[in-house]
Image 1 (cartoon, rainbow, N blue to C red):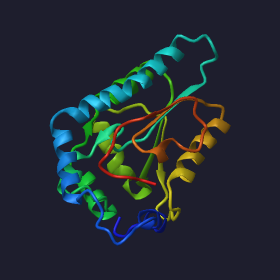
Image 2 (cartoon, rainbow, N blue to C red):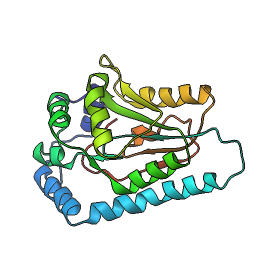
Image 3 (cartoon, rainbow, N blue to C red):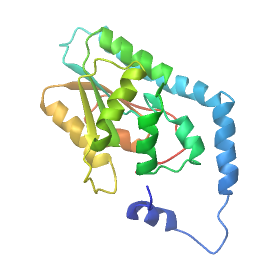
Length: 215
């Protein structure tokens, strides 16, 4: 984003004083890079994803009616954008990100791809609900297919004219709609709290992402 959203700016300014903020932003960036490149990110991601797989296994053993569904976020949930994040110093900007996904091959995050593949093998509908804009649909579809994600039942993307300060109304609204259509969302997986807030899922699983924040 080129400008900090008003809500985010207000939160950032809340409680500000004349004292210099700590820690230093460059040092935080270096710390994030070291954490990722050491393998600690992969280990933390795999650990965080295990409850999602256990949840799926639990419902696969259940004898209740099979109207189950699963909702996944995409970025830093199913797909890694590390190359973009590293090059942009963790600054998300719509235009540069749109260019990135049209020219780069997507990288699947293995723990969540395994959950996706197992759910698909058991014919559980999978819905992808992303903060990417609708204008990125074709590039996103290609991203997913190149990374091995096939057979999802729906891809919901933010309207290009979306102006809400948070993605929560959009993402929870999609889950509400799916619930109204008769789906029982047993699992909602994402890397941001805003992917999970707003209800309409039995289990929410938060994956690690210290690299950026989406309200």
